[in-house]
Length: 382
Image 1 (cartoon, rainbow, N blue to C red):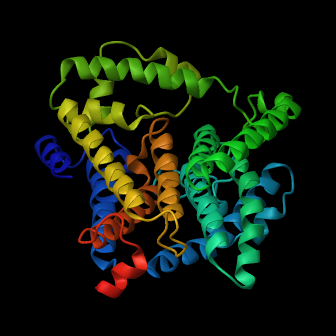
Image 2 (image 1 turned 90 degrees about the vertical axis):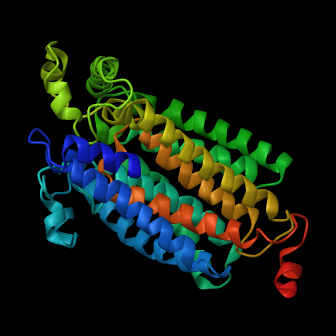
């Protein structure tokens, strides 16, 4: 946070070439300062186990709204012209809404201006549902089962390849660590077999360039990413240590002598390299990349410490399964970050760092207690 603030101060908080989501001040406030504030507040507010439910249940309630919009949007994309009449608020139906950057109207993007936040939300929601189904009792538990069934098709409706990948990778994490070791391996094998059968039966649609039916063979965005990666490397070679300034990628890219004819020909609309580390390498140099990787490693280490502190027999909300849900959230966020520039995505950044604040808060609460002390005894001793 401090490194990017210094970089933006040195290079300027405004860049004429940048639309709003890539402007230095927007990226700093929306994707760094605001998520850090949420992390700090949630971390300091963490006091008791029941707060896990306070975080997850409202997320599932919003999830019904997200699914409602996503299904209606996909119905409209597939030809039901009246589907958008049932979407509220109405401005979501505008092909381009928000300050100059609404896209992905041909995908189920939910209430957002792009489909990435919708996909990350749904992946997070799915594993939160699986966790709560294990922990809750009563009628809402059955409702969560229905919601979990509705989520995978909704992820497909987003047409986001990084969403598909993050859902699968998070599933591997869940099956390996949220179940008994032998049972997890069996479930993983069965899930892999089911996935191969589904892919084989739907391969014709999946391998098309049409996003509504899969679109994994769409080449323009893949080539566009490769072109931008090459141009980013040119910038990094000229400014290896400190970069061109946080939020000033577009300014530097447009000053390159080489002609980005490939991007013009492809018309992809890609503005920055779709990779968090590449963007930071160009804007903040090696220093920014090293600090970012260090923060990711430290957060993951905190989660591993918490996982080991919790006894395998713990059955409450604060259990090893809770940590695995966080790992699923982390997998979804950083998988997307390797295939897109996440510094415009306020919603996903806040979701991840708020989740991290809760996880780190619980890890700090358990610090005074021996690792092998059961949680109930620890609470009584306190």
